[in-house]
Image 1 (cartoon, rainbow, N blue to C red):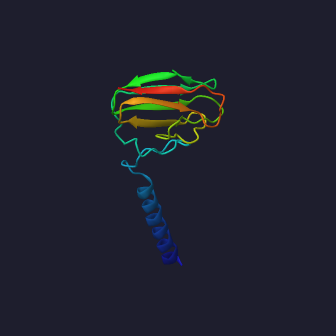
Image 2 (image 1 turned 90 degrees about the horizontal axis):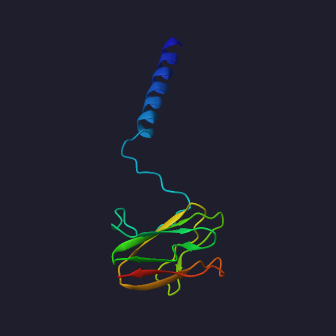
Image 3 (image 1 turned 180 degrees about the horizontal axis):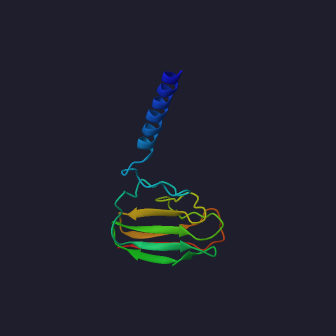
Length: 131
């Protein structure tokens, strides 16, 4: 009986050490941010420069940003209500951004991009000017 208990104790110790070794890893990627839509145009090393837009009080602030081609714009929803940042010509769409969610889009081509929130049609449109 004593050998049986020692054998079980040894097996339990091996299992516990194995679980502990698997659960701790220094190379684990950072956890993803909840409610943040994925964006194939946002590489892991985003473009330098760019601009930030806050969605607050049912408005985009600032209402217009100017960036260079190859730079990104990052939208952050600070409202409790969900919003989108959707290009009126369909070149980008954040999907639904819940409170505190972010969306980034890299603009490769010069031009003026007008966007809106498709959830709230009464919100004013805004623009991204790409030089």
